[in-house]
Amino acid sequence: MSWLILVDQNRDFANADTPHKVMTSRDYLSRPNLFGEMKPKIINLARNYSYQATGYYCSLLAEARGHRIIPSVETMVELSKKTLYKHALPELEDTLNRCMEKSNGHGGPRTVPDEILVCFGLTVDQNLSAFGRLLFDWFRAPILRVQLEQNGQPTPKRIKKIGLESASTLKGNENDFLRQALDAYTRRAWREAKTRVPAKYALAVLYDPQERLAPSKETSLKYFAKVAEKHGVEVAPITKGDLDRLAEFDALFIRETTSIDNHTYRFARRAQQEGMPVIDDPQSMIRCTNKVYLAELLTAHKLPTPKTVIVQNIRQADELPDQLGWPVVLKIPDGSFSRGVFKTESPDALREKIKSLLEESDLLIAQEYVPTAFDWRIGVLGGEPLFACQYMMAPHHWQIVKHEPGKAPDEGKFKSFPVSEVPEAVMKTAVAAARLIGDGLYGVDLKQTEHGLYIIEVNDNPDLNHGIEDLAEKDAIWDKLISWFVTRLEA
Image (tube, rainbow, N blue to C red):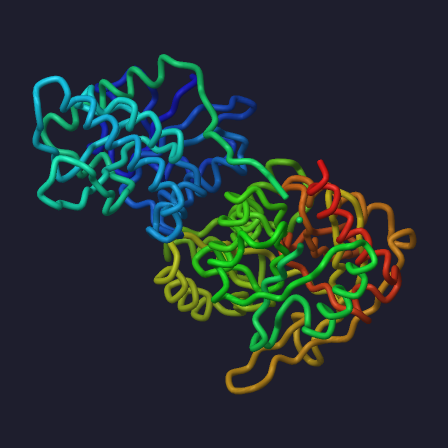
């Protein structure tokens, strides 16, 4: 089997309509080992691609399993807001209008529809073929619907909206067109989406002066700027209102808590589009900010993690204690700094917490509780060790940061180590996990127990502060960080 089609309901795309295997998204999510060593090419026709919906998780976990899938999570995020895809509009609108002007030359002005349906890069109107192909190059998705602004003129036309469409919403002849386009697409070799590549120099550092638990304090960023100056690199602090200035700089270093549904992702995406080296890059954000993805990725590569179960419904509450023991730890997919992590110690508490968390996300993860006095944090940059710390648990608490409503976060103590003094197994495991994510800066959290090591998570924007993470390795940490950017700027 080479092609697999995912649907939310069997009636959305019948198996009789295609020679390829059709599977429900629920079955795909709940059976991570179904295909073994096979790597199917997957077309995700879910009804909902929004953040943390089932369609989103199918594409996210397909990547963790080594399966090729369209649309990717990156495409879903980018098409969720016009501000995230407006960079593509000038080229798309230019091609659209040239297609229409060319067709107008063969028989005079023609009526332009309010919408254009594009399935696998194909359009019903052959005159718009070049536009359909370009749109598919920009946004690799099975079904896209383009809404045009109506100005009463044949040309020029402006794009009002580009939206991901579900197969379940297609009507009449649109269904026939989808099947034809699918058949044509699956006869071709798989093509990866085009990447827009790097360019040039001056390092912008995105930070929030009001953020209480920022990954780097303002004083640390000033220290970083002094070290960078010795390398001939100017560090310029910017804030969330400076997106339109980003192209003035040569590279971007994000020092805010990242999330794919706020401005940090937009900055990362814009930097990548401008060809700028960036930490954190959008792909690393997508991969690291979701604990469900990380759990599947680490398991797929046989790296040690606590026993983990993906939770999709409240009925699983009765099975989790037998699978994981008590207490049961529940995690929302995109929590940070110990937020969104809950320890439940009774059946009622477990059921109640699952019920409330599933109102926010279609999936959760449940893990066995692994108590330790500290967590290792290994910093990895460009696939190589950068720093090593032990973060102690907050006083009288089971996490390194204790959050209480109305109170400042309470953090445990720390101990910094030269990377050469870290146990070999800890270092090897951390580096292996980070390399699965990418080539940027990551913080790998591990627990060391008498039963072995457990990777807790991989952070895409780990804490990096003067006098803490750099205490053992000193300026070597900042030198390596600057060198990472300079090497890519000079490549």
